[in-house]
Length: 172
Image (cartoon, rainbow, N blue to C red; front, side, top):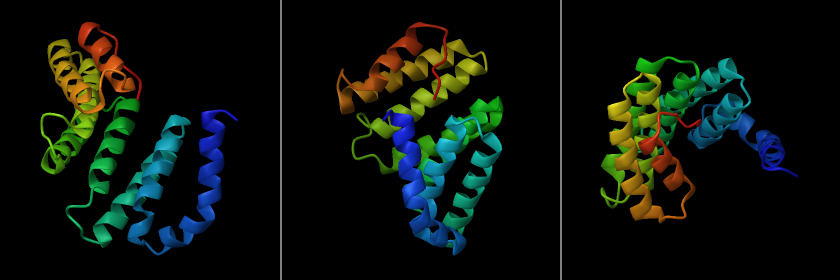
C-alpha cells in the first residue's frame, strides 16, 4: 500500500473515534482536524481544508491554552493553504505567526526543526511573491536550523539548499 492510501485508511479508521470529539469541540480533536485539513489540501479539496482549519481554530478558541503547540500547527497549515490558493499576503501573515510560536517554544533557538520548517515555508511564500532575495535568505537560515537539528540527511535539508540556490519554489 502506498503512503497516500495508507494515510487515507488511517484517517478513516480514527474518524469514528474523533468525530464525536469534534462535534463537542473537545480539545483532543484539534490535531485531528489540522491533520484532516492537511490531507484535504493535499487532495486538492481546498474548501474542505479551509472549513476544517476553521473548526480547529474554534476548538482552540473554546479551550484557551495559549501555549498549546497546536496553534503553531494551525498557523502553518493556514499558511500552506493560503499559499496553495495564491493568497500570498495572508500566507505570509500566517507563517509569521507560526514562526513566532516556534521561536518562543524552541529548546535551542539556533537548532530547531520547527523554526527551520517555518523559515522554509516563508521562503517558498516569498518566492511566490517574487522576492527572491528574501526567499534565499530565509532558505539559508532554514538550512542552518535543519542541518543543526536534523543533520545533513534530513529531507528538508536538501529542499532548503535547492531553494537557497534556485528560483524554484518547493511544493508543501
